[in-house]
Image 1 (cartoon, rainbow, N blue to C red):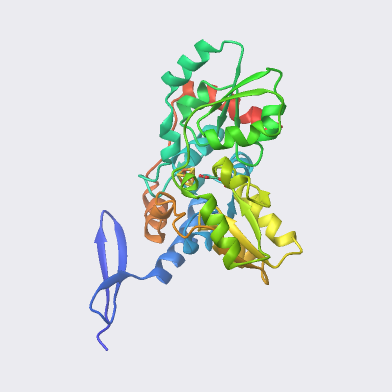
Image 2 (image 1 turned 90 degrees about the horizontal axis):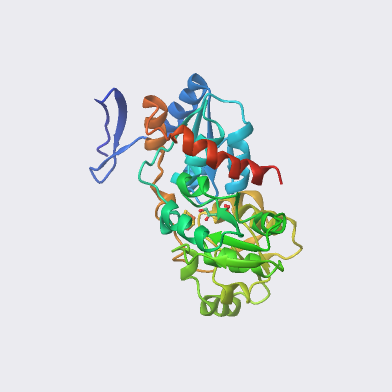
Length: 327
Ligand code: 13P
Ligand code: SF4
């Protein structure tokens, strides 16, 4: 068998390559993981990992969670460095909440397309047309949009946040599906922006019908970023961590999971004895999959790519996020 190990050194990053039987050289994953653990100690770093991240990234996390849990951790966990394994708005939120910490996003180009669907300028225009309305922004927004908002929300607290406000009219950005979901539980008038998640919006009622046929008796759980007609067919609607909690505590044994497929790794680990099937096998967020072990290791070595937010924007955005965390 042809196998050899080779070390290369580029930009001060020593990489160990292992030759496969096919003759292709790949980086030695076990060696990278060991290096990550060592660097994590040296840097006094924590790894915050979203529930949609690749399995091998979830497995090295200090905390795996949904957007709300990870925001809380970013604000409270003791560390000099936060390695945020997720997408841009999540790392930005961590940088806003912990400006004294070095916040790294290992996959620099991991962005959330929904967060790009509204700009601060567009939001200012809507606000000028509805001067008495409060602005609730989903955490999946840029720091500039958060800075224009009264309060932030995540998928796990959107209803609570909306109902906590005095105003009767609510501008809700950017996810129309989450805004319409919150409308089901409030007498307030929600004005949803027309953004959407390109992953969840792809899930159809036919997917639910087909999955129910394939797994009769299974509970259908979906994320509130799904379309209203999909939500209508579900048994339970929750954030990613809400879905995990529900599967673990439910008496049922089989579940159809209507969100990004990365969550299935955590479900397998956290809920042994339960069987989970994806509602849609194409519900894959490519941006969430851009993180890999090599990028995490490189970020810990170089302390780059670092995410920072200008002080004036951060100060205004922080108010909206902190107001949410206080609820
Ligand atoms: P959470 O339910 O984890 O907050 O998720 C949402 C999401 O889509 C992150 O992009
Ligand atoms: Fe954005 Fe949707 Fe991906 Fe979440 S799953 S990061 S909302 S594109």
